Length: 512
Ligand SMILES: [Zn+2]
Image (cartoon, rainbow, N blue to C red):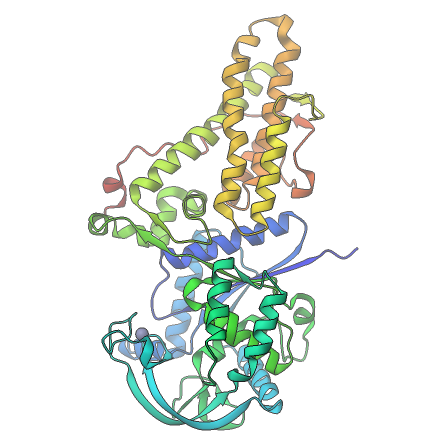
């Protein structure tokens, strides 16, 4: 039987600045989901990329004395090195300057045009260069763009328009029928209100610009950067190409993971573009919240916290992935600080998980010569119910991209297993040869919890969990074999600490 597919994307990033921790947070969340689905046996395709046709990119390239394409290629290296440092496992990385993307943009534009949803008109209005967005009078605060605190330009030009206004009814019907199309639900309500407030046609071209994709019907214009960028989700998998096998296999996307500030583009304009072009809609759009950084006092000494590569160097790629996804619920905003991250690292990873692993592995090595056979793990075992309950909660939350809650639900069994060691005192049982069976049973339960934990936490901490599973002789186990029931360690070595305790203060750790 052919395996089921899972196609997940992140927003593509403007390359006029380096990736920061907020950008990294989105990629880490999407990567966690992609890895989870792979471990469940899904044929998973994970797409990321860079958005290069921005006027700001052209300006930044000029400022550095570079051709725009050379600048984009340098920035692509910076982005991809950052993602590698965080162990992000994307399957493809699209650049909007690539020919495959330009082809797809022209094809979708032609399809929408042929279906009668594009017309030429006169645009008079305001445009914020930094947003790269047309802004309306009512969105301004004291005459300024609220995001950039700068005065938008007044633009008057002949433009091509997309008949977004014709999609109010179809979009509302789609969102009503598909309750998970926009997630979380609070975002869906916002989108419904925007649509009910009335949709206006949108300008989708800029006149007299050279940096961009010329319209197939009028090369005096280039495609507006947002209209261009959204199409990456289908251009990367071969829409409009001569061999659209990947498109046929993976589209529609299962989830577009984006920031909460760009929901209107992804939940209104994008689905309307697809409807107009006769392309099926994605299954869902998930809008994550934003990270904020504690009080102002940290910004002085802890400016480094914004650099994902420095954070990966401090906590390890696995550590920072875990900390961000545990500390900030993916669907909401959350605050972090150096103290919070260090505290969480020491409590959860160095103490609870790290100790459970080193104590259990050390005891199996010492008392059983590194070999253990126990199981099957069934209802007669003391940790059975708590492990089964933790796994149920974990899967339920993972399926909804609720990473923090998934970890919270699973962590119950890790804490329980640590208490189990204190209650059962295997180090005392080992002193009494008549308690041998009890000792093996206790260590067997602990082993089962640990091996299961290694698989369950792999999407969050792929490197460290692979290391732990190798120690336990349980590498390569998929989600379909949980809990790991048959405890069968072969020659376990006493391990080094997986997560060495961090002794430094936040101030010490994050200084330049
Ligand atoms: Zn702006």
